[in-house]
Image 1 (cartoon, rainbow, N blue to C red):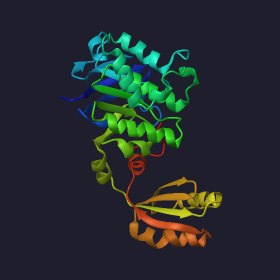
Image 2 (cartoon, one colour):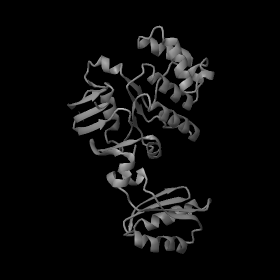
Image 3 (cartoon, rainbow, N blue to C red):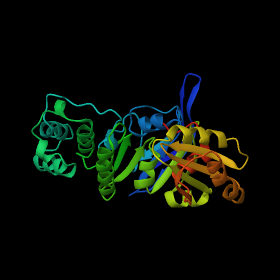
Image 4 (cartoon, rainbow, N blue to C red):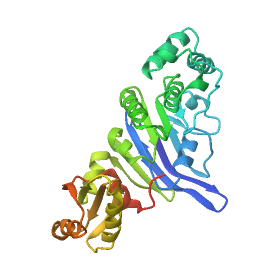
Length: 312
């Protein structure tokens, strides 16, 4: 039985069709990355699957139960971390998790469950501090803990690493990798590198429809595209960006992305690129520290399937 199954899901807001016959299947034990450009329908999908919104048409099942307006039993089987979780700032972390435990009807095990979750998310030492004094990363980890209080079969995460610094992102991603042994995780995010790092299955949505859904490695292999990376010396980012813009028009270039001093060029003609790319960089006077043909990334696949609107 699938952990999540969606059949022909539709959702309209007036004349706007947010979801247009969406089909989706997530197998148990999967860490599923849900991607799509701005306005693709990701948030709408998640709100419907968690019972926070009603579809215009179609059906969905989560944790073996159909999602309906009155599916109270289903809500006991899921956990949900919104993009901006809300807390009572005057409570301590321990008090907050205890409060959530009471809401779920935990009795004798509430205290031990609170201790277990605080240890899991690394907040034991600050469990007596008021939440209002927590950093963004600490609040995000506490949000994960509250989403796990009821031992959910399916955990929904909306942008779980958004706004975190590199250390905070690393902590949350490592935590998600440990959680995959406990439940199915459905993660909506715009950070492609996070999906590529931790998700074993990826779904890409555009215009309210599923564009593709497959295991990550299968997806990368299926849409494998030749790409080159060139890295220049630090301090020359402006010149590198200007050069990257100039080669976008070359007929053998598919996409060009720039990250600081690094340029990634996806091509449609490898042999021409091998002859022309390095020569063009040298002719422009760039001083390169690295030049190589690289493995395709999830970003390459995303841009190939939905264009350069970018994930959001």
